[in-house]
Image (cartoon, rainbow, N blue to C red; front, side):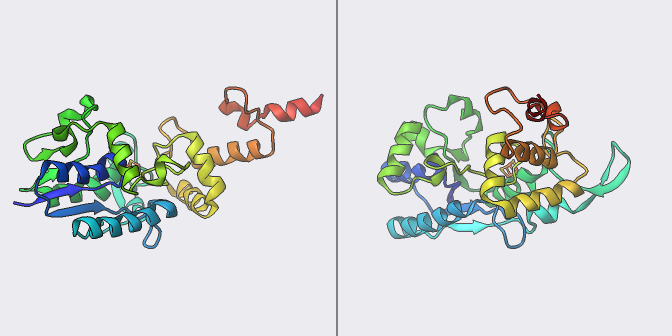
Length: 258
Ligand code: SF4
């Protein structure tokens, strides 16, 4: 039986290293599931990819363990274009964007792999001692060294800062998780379009091919694109609650008529 830390590179996950050390717990392996957007493009932003490389070097140096980066056989894009039979519509079609219910990405690209690796082993996960709403995830085989050591989220952040292991998601506008995530908010999508137009172009391409709408509220990537373009042209007031009907009738154009 091995003792494996499941590493996400978030503060709580990284701080598990400090808690494991403090508790004197055994640690045999550190595993990270790397998600790929396409065959050549990471699901993480470049800043995060860079941070992971830096963190791996620090971990190897301090703990003598090489972080294992494991990946699904398929990228997000490959799974997106895989064909399936849609029972509801009774048609053969591609997967397309993950639905909020029946979200295929997490299982196909991440958790499925971890389950295989962790089977029969002790898995360490980063749940802080002040996150009781997540304690139901803990079992005899799934242990949080942070809970065992009584480390709170603030203590984890402090430990990461002191050990030069604080991810850029806490200090910059970069979000954690996949840049193409259907669960991200409008602000993050706006930033993605602005900072990474090449990624945004890929999202627009996928949007045209997807049988599933990008956002759970029924809006497509093209809807967001139109909204952001109108904002850039100052045709949408940013100090008022946005209304989707403005896409066809932007208030800025009415204002200009008078
Ligand atoms: S971050 Fe979003 S896109 Fe990536 S696996 Fe999780 S739910 Fe899916």
